[in-house]
Figure 1 (cartoon, rainbow, N blue to C red):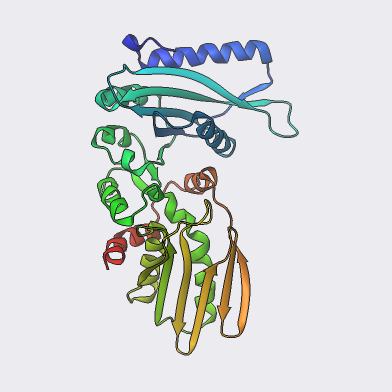
Figure 2 (cartoon, rainbow, N blue to C red):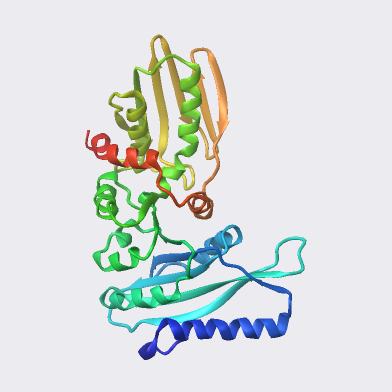
Length: 323
């Protein structure tokens, strides 16, 4: 671990160089150094390191990167940092692939010392993305200089149980120099694809409703209603049909009802991976994937550009949520 009193990017890069030389001596040509981007990950100090490590490892396999984890705590502890190499052996290969990881611990009081360190650690001429699952943490004013280092900032509004509170945080994060993405929007991709298929086969939509489960307005349901409002041009009511939250991984959206002319179509979540679709006397079932953080991040990291559909839904979300 680097000496807290003299932490700088040059010192940390020197530690990484020493690690590469060490592994090169022990493994010879059996190691491949891989990096396609810099990934900044901001978490609270109490975040489970094992769970986070598993997610980061899965991301590295699809998107080799230099990962910089910033753990934000309370109190007056000094900034600390350490470096490691994360290696894995792809199936059927005899060569390990290794990526670099730097862990930085700071507090809200000394976060201002972190951006210069990160700036010196970013890989030149490669994109920089930032992921912060905790929406409240991402919207802290003290974290703003860190966000400005990224070309894309990925948050997860489902960390807030109420869309009204989530909107307050999203408003603070909008309009920055970065492209904003919300993993909650990515979670409703399958809903949007299924509804789009239904709309293509049926009559023009005249009325629709989105229902959800759990206390507090679901942001996922709000995004879906905002997208439907853009598609239909009419208001889309949101309704809570059950105050009890569904099991983890199932999502809070319960059902969508669409009406066009004499045709009524109902789409209802019936299980963790199943959706029933009923149109008159006809029925079918669709399969929905269980989304992990790594799956959603993989989807977002594939495209660094602006998502106009998300931007439209985000702009419409306040109207839908506040009715």
